[in-house]
Image (cartoon, rainbow, N blue to C red; front, side, top):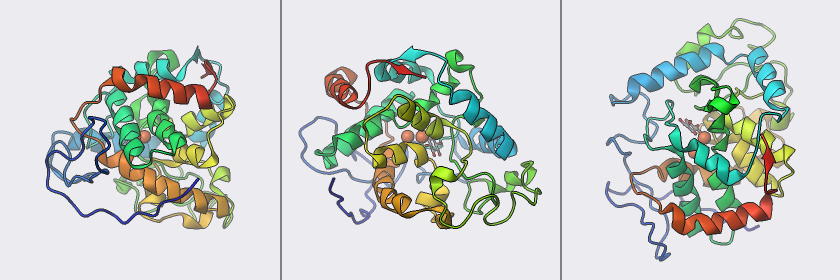
Length: 300
Ligand SMILES: O[C@H]1[C@H](O)[C@@H](O)[C@H](O)[C@@H](O)[C@H]1O
Ligand SMILES: [Fe+2]
Ligand SMILES: [Fe+2]
């Protein structure tokens, strides 16, 4: 596994920033604006999605406390809901639009393929990262009726650790003041229930699609490398991978894996566009990757 260290690309004018014609004639260009003409991850700018997104984060921040996370992890960690393949799960996601996302109003399957294909162009040899791109958001299947139709605030959005103080870099952090842990002295200090360098594996993260998909992959004995599992598990942890908060909780392995997560993030975020991927054209490739890294049927 070689790690290409990339310079952040300079902003480009809005327009055709990515072509999916498969001729591999260039690398991914970071667009300046999202579909509604705002910069990416702008939670303040007036847009058609602003109020929905803010209300989403209010509910998320009020409810995602230590006890809630523990309960959900135990419950959904049992993997006793259904058996299905990875591709079947991709198809289930077709009906959902993510309320936390100011940059995307397409069905999730588009986003999965756009992310995976963008990575594939720039890192043709890292097939595990292509597959990671395809499956990183599959945990959003928790929104589906088969999984109890969890509310969006318990499935999507950025994540943050619970059990220690909330960092200011968390999006719409003012609503965290209404979180039951906010005034609890057990949980509201810098380290809270953790110790310096304890490793993220020992830290409880707000519950959602990242941790759930990580648990699914683990439980079903995926052969994806540890970096792939790390990307899936922490791709919504913007306070860490983008703002550099909570670094003191990481161990050496986390620090290694974080490099891949930061590469991945560029594709996860900026491949969101109105340019459609031809599902039938790329499907055989992804089916072959799924076969390489996962059993035919998984327990969810
Ligand atoms: O709104 C988005 C979306 O829910 C993504 O899937 C998640 O990974 C991001 O962190 C979040 O900000
Ligand atoms: Fe996600
Ligand atoms: Fe994503």
